[in-house]
Amino acid sequence: MGIVDKAKNAAEDAIGKAKEVVGDKTDNKDLEAEGKGDQGKAGVKKVGENIKDTFK
Image (cartoon, rainbow, N blue to C red; front, side, top):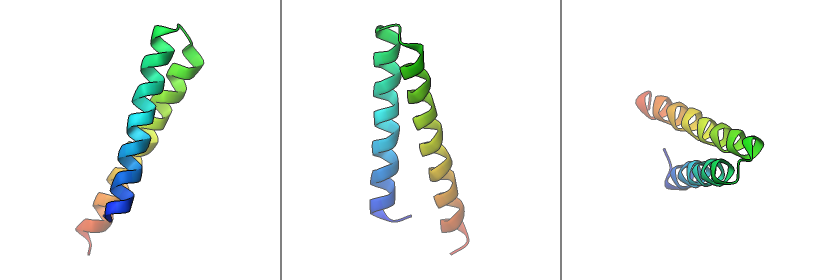
């Protein structure tokens, strides 16, 4: 996995966590769900990159 890809995935995960917390604190369920979705996407990308790295 390239350093740039790792950084992008970590940033997407961090943004997702922040959205989830803000959504929870402000009782904004849509923002909370969006944050969880962002975290999920980042996780899927990380797994995909790890699989690619395994087969190199």
